[in-house]
Length: 63
Image (cartoon, rainbow, N blue to C red; front, top):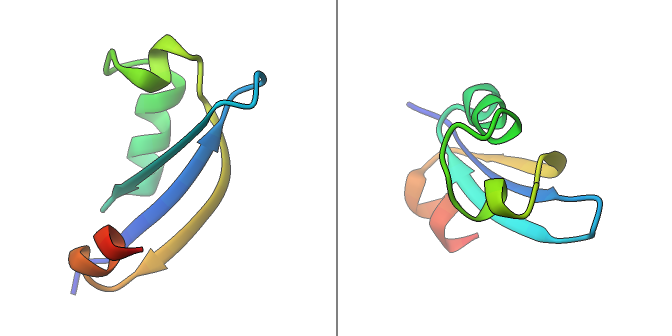
């Protein structure tokens, strides 16, 4: 069974971002290196402040 993660990131300006992924290290690398232009790149959101592991994708979405 594949694990999924719900995570919260922040910027120095206290902008928050909530996301979910099935590969947390890869996703953090993408955020920190601004590999996908979007909200986190625009607002420099690159600090992981919380994460939670869940067993099902639907559980991550609900969380």
